[in-house]
Length: 76
Image (tube, rainbow, N blue to C red; front, top):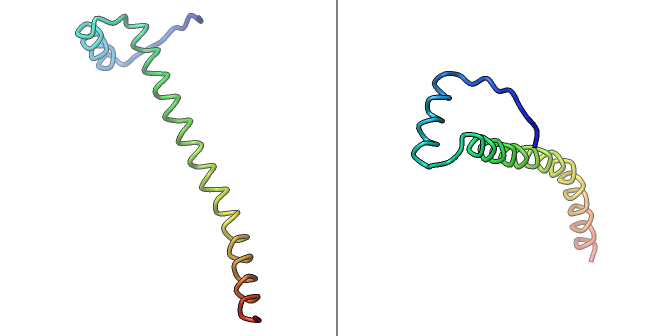
């Protein structure tokens, strides 16, 4: 594990203290889980962005191939 110095806004700190107290959970564990969830959320967001970008690239190729198939079907 790495040590980290963290500055939280007062309101966020107070909410964290209240929640961890009610959950009987160490503040460190709570923050680790929160950061892990946020990392997973952002990984999915980045993946979605990448997939949309790649889908747009492939879309034009797919349309071109579809047109070629339609032309072949029309010839028969």
